[in-house]
Length: 192
Image 1 (tube, rainbow, N blue to C red):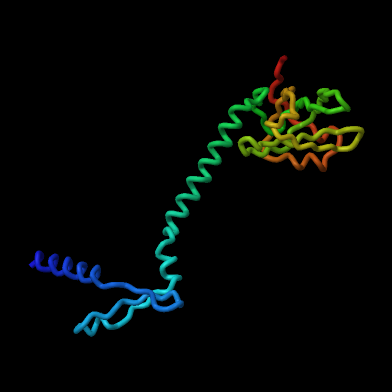
Image 2 (cartoon, helix red, strand yellow):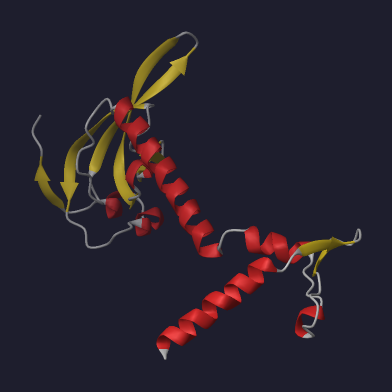
């Protein structure tokens, strides 16, 4: 029984391959030549060029996979480049509330110098190579905040001078305080 079905399928495939296909006019449609004595084959099947183009396009899943592979390759290449650059210094473990001294490279004409900026870390944004810290200090009675990218080439060094005991992730409440109210409880002192 199964062998008869297989034989019939093979015969149908052979018949389909024997039917000649011809183009019909300038419309871009394709027709099948009718064979003698067979009424069903006299019906002309039409395909537009658009259908043919759609059948040649890759499936959307394949496109998504290729895009993903390309993005992964680009990210890998960028990581390799960053490893080759190698950072000049190791970034210490910085916590919120720490008092840090950041050495910033300043360009003055043809000379470069390191300017220390000391203040309290009130916020930290952790994003791998794009990690930042926000350092606040009081300069001539005015609060000044500066955001530093930890892996920036303009940072020469970061030194932790004091650690504080805090229970918040962001110390924005220090902006509203003045004088002794801005003090934080000391955790421990690092000796250099």
